[in-house]
Length: 292
Image 1 (cartoon, helix red, strand yellow):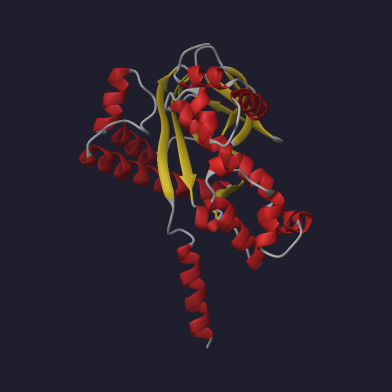
Image 2 (tube, helix red, strand yellow):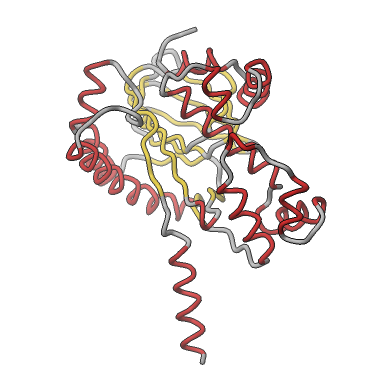
């Protein structure tokens, strides 16, 4: 009986990673885009500092980096201050595992020195056909680019190898990507439902709670206990990730507003500025590597 139980638990744990998705949202080499100030990242930020210095703070964590260092930062608000001479190689990695409600935990900012294996994998990634083409065209965002099957498979293979090594380095430094326990069936079911709702259909806190037989306030408490966030906050984060990804693809703000469930462009613009600290147009311009 004990063996059967352990086998079932192991199978359940493995199933959490069945829908793991890893994508490269941005690849940039040169001067920092946003030299000094507060910025909000919706994906994992990975920098290789080629020259200059950087001071990065997130919450109560403050880290200093110099040329040759790697810097990795959780999604969310951060304050960065690059020196005038700074140059870097920047990767924005979107890591998603909806079935397991996986999230980044532990130290929000990690700095570490040269790692020969990670540098080798970075060099291999830079030389993929798709990234070389984007570099020649002055473009930053691989997602949404028209490409061949062979080129996208090459990119995904190299990106997966790079990310695997990165995770190995981050774990002993206190940064981990983990699935949530979600031991309460009501949390699991409401999370599953909320994660599958089309953003254009909107979110009702009360209706979601009714589907699992609890009040809205009770569901908030259950989510906070197991996921450290409320359903509303999770929904807002889904919207924000989608909006940023669409704007990076150079979609018009009106179209992005519709795709993320807003009735009016003005509502979307106010919401986006409140969450990101800048307008949709300013974000799109900055992400293209052009100073607004």
